[in-house]
Amino acid sequence: MVTAVAIAWTRHLFSAVMLASIYGLVSASFFVAMDAVDVAFTEAAVGAGISPLLMLVTLRMVGAKEATSHNHPYAALIIVAVVGVLLLLGEQDLPAFGSADAPAHGHVAPHYLQESAAEIGIPNVVTSVLASYRAFDTLGEVAVIFTAGIGVMALLFSDTPVHLRNLPNTSRSTMEDQVIPRVVGKILIPPIMLFALYVQFHGEYGPGGGFQAGVIFASAVIVYVMLFGLDAAMQVVSVSWLRFLAACGLLLYGAVGVVCLLAGKNFLDYNALLPDHIAAQHLGILVIELGVGVTVACVVMLLFFAFVGRIPHLPDHEARDG
Image (tube, rainbow, N blue to C red):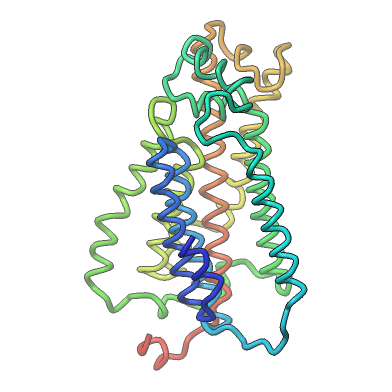
């Protein structure tokens, strides 16, 4: 709460971004304490990592100081106060935290917890719910991520049809003269990517999955951009391929459902994939999680490339001065 109030209070935008990163890290620690490690993975990577980086890139273009407003938004303050009071009143009717009699614990949750091992055959109930029981809902989430990527790309490049690879050289604004960070980055980036693959293909048996693996893999590429520049990263990761793969990941997910329909089963009913029930569940989850991971990783990298590509080219003396 203190961090949230400080974010709203400060007028120094750089401080607000740093506080937002701290808020994401604290939230991730809360999720870990509540045994929601899968959510903590995503919050740590996105809330404390990638989102602050995108905001910092934005500050590089607009400045780090909020403009002074001479208006007094009393109407907005009154609305916020009224909504806050209503939320506090509504909170009185919520069940106690962790109560066994809560409505959420009396419907499908007991079935998921008790029957997941027999019906899905994997120990991670979170993956069972997201990738099997609620696979159609997760498909919508992946579609939202893909659509968000398209929207950002359309907004940032609506004024010019050029590809990202044709943007001005931004490598001089990176830490090209800092030997130690670049050497440490070369050492750490491969293990980060390897860990992303582990999270991707071990999500059935431990915390992780396509969402977490995608943002971790994208984080490794973002670190590479920060250390070696956008042009160097584009020589390794083609923007055209990122766009193609982002669409392929979502199509791969949807194709699994189409195959199930063609086999006479319900959409995303993995029993149509193999004769053995458990093996079919494992195969379906593996394929759709791969589609999730590919789409998430590619969209996050495209977003970062798009933001960084908007930074104007620095003069030589300004680049050296940082």
